[in-house]
Image (cartoon, rainbow, N blue to C red; front, side, top):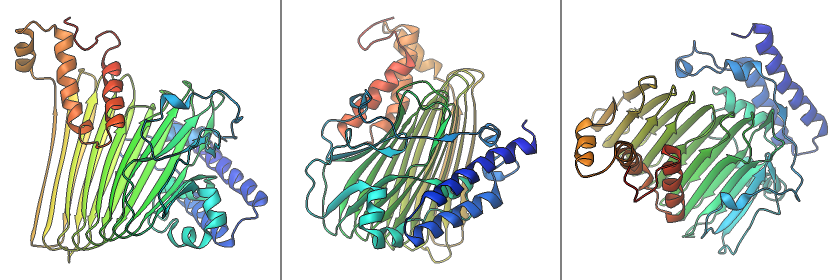
Length: 446
C-alpha cells in the first residue's frame, strides 16, 4: 500500500498541471471558473478508497501513487493506423490522439443541415453560450472525484449538436487513440452531445491504443436528450492491457425521449465505467446494455444508475460479463424511483459467466423505491458453462474447446446483437472470437 505522502504527491501533480494550465489560459471566464471549481472539489475529495461503498471492490491506490504527465499532441504526420478502428458508413468521424484533436484523421463528411460536429475546444470558441449552458450541468463533479478531475484538466473532446427534428441515420464516431509514445501520460477527454426535440442520432465512442503501454484515460460524456428525441450510444473500450481507464457517461432525458446505451469493456488492466441516466420527463424510456470480457488479472467495474424522476417512465438494463484467468469484475446497478414517479416500469438483469476457478465477480443490484405504484424487478446470476450443453455439442462431433467457444459467444452475443449499427456489431463479434481463441476459426471442428 502506498504511504499517504505518496498519494498526496500524485494529487499535487494534478494541481501543478492545473496551475500550469491556468497560467497559459486566456479562455472564457466561465470556463476558468468551472475548471477551478472542479480542481477545488478534487483536492477536497482526493482519490476514492475502498473505505467508500461505491469503491469497495475497486482499489485505485495505483492511480493515487502514480504520477502521469499530461499527454502532448502527436505529430500529425505520424503513422497512426486509425483505419483499424474506423467503421464503414460513418456520417462523421472526430479523432483525438493523446487527447488532442487530429485534423488529419478526422472526417466531417457530409452532414445534414442542423448538425454540428467539432472539437470541444473549437465549440467553446465559436458557440460559447451554448456550451456554457450545458457543460458540467449534469456530470457530478461535486461528489465524483474523477469527474471533478476531468472538469479541471480536460484539454479537448467532442461537441455534437443536433437541431430539432433532424434525423441522422448513420453514426457519428468519436475516436480516442494513443500514439506509440504515450507511455506514462494522462488524458481527460470531455464530450458534450446536445440533441434537440424530435431528433434522432447514433453516437459511437471508441477508446484504443496503438501500443501496449501504461497510461491513464479519464473521460466524461454528457448527453442532453431533448423531448421526443431518440439517441443510441455505443461505447467501446479497448485500451492497452497495461492502461487505466475511468469513464463517466451522464444522460439527461426530456419528456417521451429514448436513450439506448451499449457499453462494451474489453481492455485496460483496471477499468471503471459509471453511467447515469435521469429520466427527467414524463414518458421517457432508457435501455442500458453492457458487456465486459476480461482475462488474466484484469479488473473491470460498472456502476449504473437509472434515476426515475417523473411518472410513466420505463427502463431496461441487461449487463453480461465473461471472466477468465484471475480476472475480477464488479457490477453495481441502482434503480431509483422518486416519490412522484408513479407507474414506473423498470427491469434489471446482470448475468456472469466464469470460465476459470480463479475469476471473481461482485454483483449488487439495488432498488430505491419511494413511489407506491410501480413495477420494478432485478436479478443477478453467476455461473459456469452448462455441462449438459457442452455434452450436447460434443455428441454432434464438435470438439470440447469449440463447444466452449460457441457457448461463450452465444452468451456474449446476446448483448452485442442489440447494437443496431451492423459494422460495429460485426467488428465486435470478430473481436470477441479472436479473444476467446487465437487458433479456433469458424467452421473448424476441434
